[in-house]
Amino acid sequence: MGVMDGVRVVEVASWTYVPAAGAVLAEWGADVIKVEHPVTGDPQRGLSAMGLVPQGPGGVDYMIELPNRGKKSVGIDLTTPDGREALLKLVVTADVFLTNYLPPLRKKLGIELEDIRAANPNIIYVRGSGHGERGPEKDKGAYDGSTFWGRVIAAQATPADRDWPLNQPFAAFGDLMGGLTTAGGISAALFHRERTGEATIVDTSLLALAMWATGANILAAGLFGMTQIPQGGRDQMPNPIMNMYRTKDGRFVTLMMLQSDRFWPDLVTTIGHPELADDPKYKDAAARFENRKECITTLDSIFAEKTFDEWREILANAKGVWEPVETPGELLEDEQALANGYVRHITLDNGTSFRIVPSPLQFNESPPDLVRAPLHGEHTDEILQSVGYDMDQLIEMKVKGAIL
Image (tube, rainbow, N blue to C red; front, top):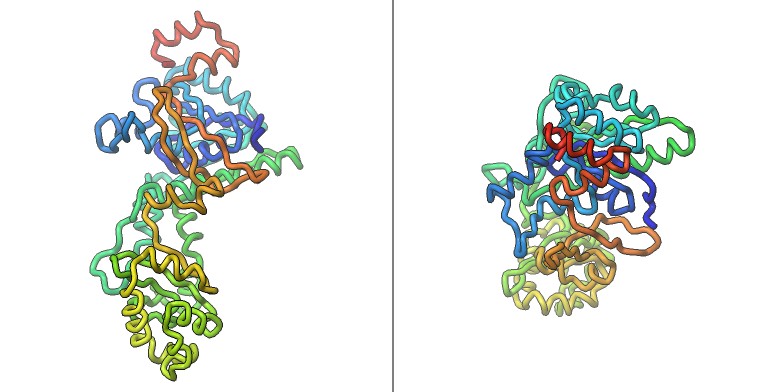
C-alpha cells in the first residue's frame, strides 16, 4: 500500500512541469487520471510523433514516460457539453484537481476554481504556472528552459569568462524539481484537510521555484547591494580543495572539503604528497588562499598523473568529502544508487524494459515499483464506467467526438 493509496487526482495538464507532480503522486500510490484531448492528446505526444523527441529502442517515448508513468489516461474534449459533464463527474470522485492551464484557457474550458468547487466543494485545487497567479505576467506561458533557467538561473550559473549565458544543460531540469515540489504541497494540503476539514488552493510557479533554488544568491545580492554575485575562475577558488580536478584520462573528480585545515594534511598524504602538509605556502587556510593559484596548479599536476579509476580507488581512503564526476550512463550502473533503489525498471506491453529514476523519497525503506505511462485515452471506458456511464452512452459520446 502506498502512502497515497485511496487518493484520486484528476489532472488536466500537459508537458512536464505539472504532470511530473502527478507522476510522483502515482508513484506514492494515488489514482491519477490524466485528462487529454481525444484527438491531439498531451502536446508532448505530438513531439514524439513528429520525431522532435526521439523514441528509444522498442518504442520508449521517454518524455512521455518520465512525467506520466503510473497514470490512467482518459480522452475527453472539454469544449463539448458532454465532455465537460464527464470531467465534472470525475471531479466529484476526486481529492485533488491538478492543472497547469493558464487563466484564459481555464476560463474558456470552465475549470476555474469556482467551477471545480461547484462540483466538489472539498477538492484541493492545484495550479502550476510559469509566473504565478497575480501580476502583469500571470497569463504568460513558460517552460523551464525559459523562466526557471533563462530568467533566473542562467546569469547566476554562467562563468564570468563566458560571452554568452549558459543554456539549460539538460531537459526537464526545473520541471522535475517543480513536480516534486508540487507533490509536496499537495501532500501538505491533504494533511491540512484531514486535520481541519478545509480544502485549500495550492499555487506554485517556475519563477518561484527558480528563485527558491537560488535563494542564497538572491539574499546575498540584496544584503550587499549587488546585481550579481561575483564569480571567479576555478584557478581563483578561495579554498583549493573545494574544486574540480582533471584526471590523466580526461575525467574529473570534485573535492568539497569546506574545513580545509582539518582535511588538507590527510588529503595530500592520501594522494601521495605528504610534504605539502607542512609546505609554508600551503600550511593553513590563509596561506592556501594567498597562494591559491599556485596551490590549484600543484593539485592539477598531481591529479593529472593518474586515471579516473585510479583516483576513485585512492580517494576512497580520504577523510574529506569528494565525488567522482559521473556520466548519466554511469549513474544507471552506480553501485550506491542501485543499492538504494535509485534506478528502477519499467516494462512495456511489448516486453521492452528500460531503466528510469524514481522520485527521491522512499517510505518504509521500500523503493517503488513503477509502471509505464498510459497510452493516449487508454482508460477512457474503464474510468467513465466507474462514474456511472454505460456503454451505450459512451458509444454515443464517442460518435459525437466528446471522448476517445
